[in-house]
Image 1 (cartoon, one colour):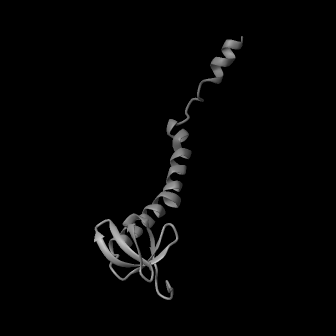
Image 2 (cartoon, helix red, strand yellow):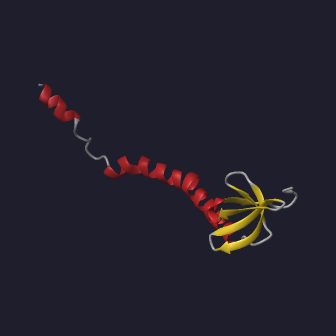
Image 3 (cartoon, helix red, strand yellow):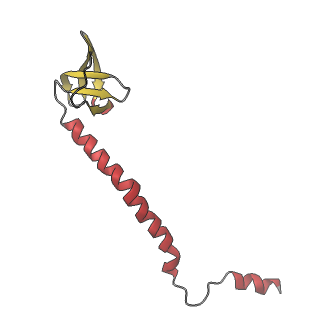
Length: 107
């Protein structure tokens, strides 16, 4: 008797579309794409463009929170950044968090 009940419980009702079972998963993926993945890719692309546009004289903020001015570009991945009068440090390009846009003084 219990075997027939267990067997009946494991079957799908006749006429139910198997694609309908995956519809909620597909819908969740589409929502995640538009709310999480796409905006993150857009931000990453903008950050990469900002890194490529850096030149000597630009004021930057590193990911560690250090304000400075790019004094010299040593190679394609390294800058010499002046953080105070006469104090210069080497900074890897990927450590630059943002470019300072007007109004901020680093002295």
